[in-house]
Image 1 (tube, rainbow, N blue to C red):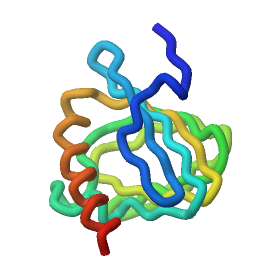
Image 2 (image 1 turned 90 degrees about the vertical axis):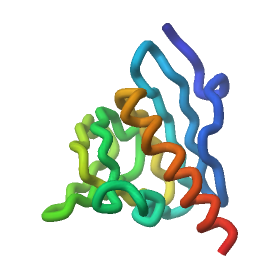
Image 3 (image 1 turned 180 degrees about the horizontal axis):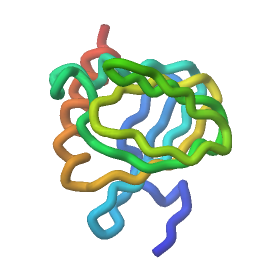
Length: 124
């Protein structure tokens, strides 16, 4: 399978960011671009411990991602290949682009809550 970024559906978009996705087999494939700094912490409110319960594997194309767990933080930089374990939240530096793969079934449970939270945040 293959696709180009322009062929992917926009999952989330707002002032300063766009996140596109598709499903391949049982995997969610997501490409995000952040033109402005963005802290996704509030987006996970309502999930267990207000953190994403979904594991993910990915690559930072450019920029920097701060992954926050209950007891530690990791900084992912341009060129890093990564795994985020369940129980995390993230923030993105302006200019960040990434690609991430996660199990579709687990991701679908998260995406509706994230979409709802972002819609509320954008209205404030």
